Image 1 (tube, rainbow, N blue to C red):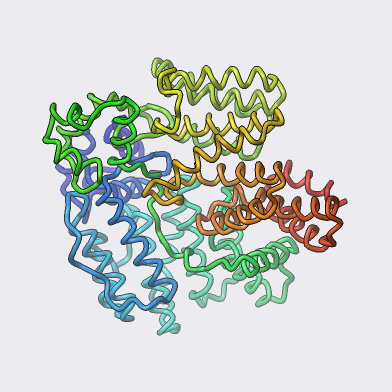
Image 2: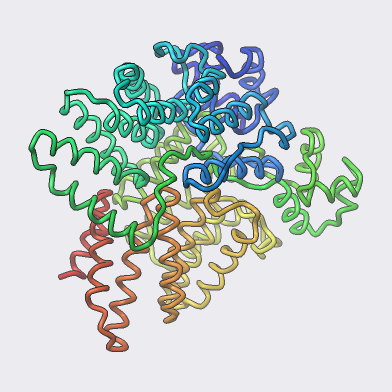
Amino acid sequence: MKIGKIYKGIREAMGLSQEDVSAGLMSAKALSRFENDENYPNSYMMQILFERVGKSLRHFIFMLSKSEYEYHLWRRDTVAQILRGDSVHHVIYQGHKGKYIDKKLHWQFCTFWQGFLDNNLEQMQNAIVCTVKNYPNQLTMRNCLSMEEISYILLYVEKKLTVHPDKWQEEYAQIRFLLNYVERMFDSEEIVEIYGRAVYVFGTYMDTPDINEKILFYKKAIELKRRNFKIEGLDRLLEGIILEFQKINQQAPKDYEQMLNMLRKIKAEFHIDDYTFWQIKPTYEVYLLNEVLKIYRQEKNKAIKEIAQKCCSEKTYRALENGMRDANDGTLAVLFDELEIKLGIYNADIITDNYADLILVDKIKMVGKRAVQGEELQLLEHLVQTLGDKAEYAQNRQFVECMRDIALYLDEKITAEQYQERLKYTLSYTISECCADNTKHFLTRVEFMLMYYTAILSRKSGNSEKGMEIVNELWEQLVQSTVRLEDRDQEAAVLMILRKNLSTDIFRYDEALKIATEGIEYCFNSGDASKLYNFLFEIGWIYNELIQEKNIFMKPQCRKYFEYALCISEMFYIERNASIIRKYLS
């Protein structure tokens, strides 16, 4: 996958020059090398570059070295500690080395958060100016901004107006511009998080007399959250709009008050923290290079000596496989060829050089979440047409047939037996007979999905024990990895759902309740509400089973969790789920 070519296509379609998007980050010459796929920046720089053209990297899976991933975790954990109010006295400037470190972005990060800790507005502003050159002067549409840069500006404004609330007029034009910038520059899903933050700052700190303007901004931010299954910060936006209605002596829409009350109850019951609202995280999923090398070597049944002899010493290879050192591009090319690794450093669910194809893949998944009958098949047909000759690539055929078959099965166009046969065939595109032991195969995201559906079919056929075996193997692969579950978000969430379903099937109610509780916390921490209904509903279902089987009086608890699940379904427009719960409640 030529990620540089993809980026260049986006930039040119947006009508932006290399100088526009690289300003304050790198030279136009360095950007040109990236766009020609000659030399890639580190993953943090790449995320900022994509965001500066209004996109994100959420479609991609990056293969990172262990040291680069540890740096990611350090940044993330440092911000989390600061936002939680933990005892953090000094943000470390030194101690991080390697090609994955961009000195400018590292200095900006450390300087900004140290200024935040010390309530030093000048230091925070200096950090922003590091990459946003004409700040704090009025920004224009030629100032390409990433979500992280916008987040820095919003945090600076919030810190300033908390101390000097009377100075809101100094920041009004800037925040108003940012709202307009985000709407015009970012794609629909990319808008959601940063737009909500900007609206929150505007609504909370701008003492403008135009209440209706604030209400309109709040409504748009709330609707964006609901349409895109984003729960993070939704309660803050609901609180804000209700307060604005009160200022003009009007009653806020009833569903807003119901949603806010329900969110407060759920967050209080499951002890959900609120600090994640301001945290900017990488949007891509992560594979670890050393883990990929090890699993592929074991799958090929090759000794370390055999692999190392073509590119490096045994000692060097062992260090690579243990994550103790990074490899240069030449060494990696030899290793990938020797181990027949089809993955690249940058991966997605399909192989393409066209970003529009990745957007279409995302839309197909979104339709699948909403269970809109028939629409998924139409979109898949469109994807095949846009891919052209690339539609015949094994990985692309696998994705299309995977999504097509699950849609046909859910729409009852094929039987469970037919679907099972198709699953085996679709898996065979990338997993040969000799690699049928999936515990020794590094599963891609699509292969993971196919194995997941195999477990679902085992459950549907009444063999929950077999389904649990498959799920446990998949879960082991996730938890044994150094990569945190939140960085394999798509795989982790669906596995949690299936694990708790299978646990319920075989009457392991305590285990199912534990998984459901962890799943609820996971949904809030990741900000993705698309699976939240499943976990809330499961708790209600288990209490319902206990009422019937053990005559335990849990009717109030049972009803409470069904009501939680109903509210979440209605909040995010998942009508099929909502109609199921209404039947249970009646």
